[in-house]
Length: 206
View 1 (cartoon, rainbow, N blue to C red):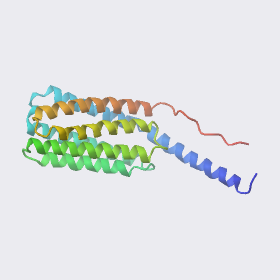
View 2 (view 1 turned 90 degrees about the horizontal axis):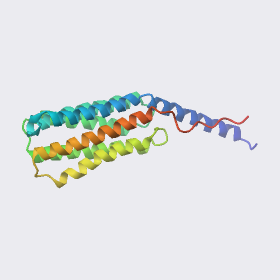
View 3 (view 1 turned 90 degrees about the vertical axis):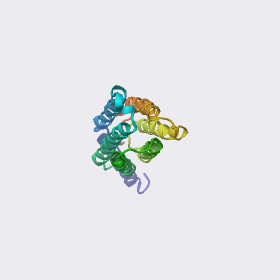
View 4 (view 1 turned 60 degrees about the vertical axis):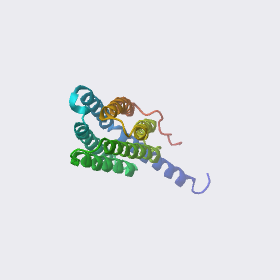
């Protein structure tokens, strides 16, 4: 045994245990991710079932409520797993709350402004979701799921600028597709977090 090898093993073992504890903590909050998926389905249902949501004002109010709820959920998740690198998730939550508050404060925004607001929210939220998954890749169970949710949201944001002069009804259709896709991805991701870990920690040799 080389001098210092016992310390090196102990250091690596402590690091493995720390990572395992973080993974366990994140996986223990799987229900928060599933709740986000359910909320996304509820958003899609409201868009589909309430006839007045095709008006600019009503659509702005509904989007503002959704952005606030989504931002609040992201902040709650970030606070719950603070041992992980969650700076990007804090940013994601703050962005959602800021955009949601702005949307609710707008009395009757032009359709183009609403498109810009939703697009900015989606690009920022998707990028921050992916940044969180990238930074927490080694402590985040099923990190690819967070990347997928980020890609879905980013896709919405990057698609909207191609339709800036379309009606509120078109934006409503975009949001319905996004909400359903986001709900499916978040629900699957949350359920995947609830599954047992794929790899066990290496046991110390005796």
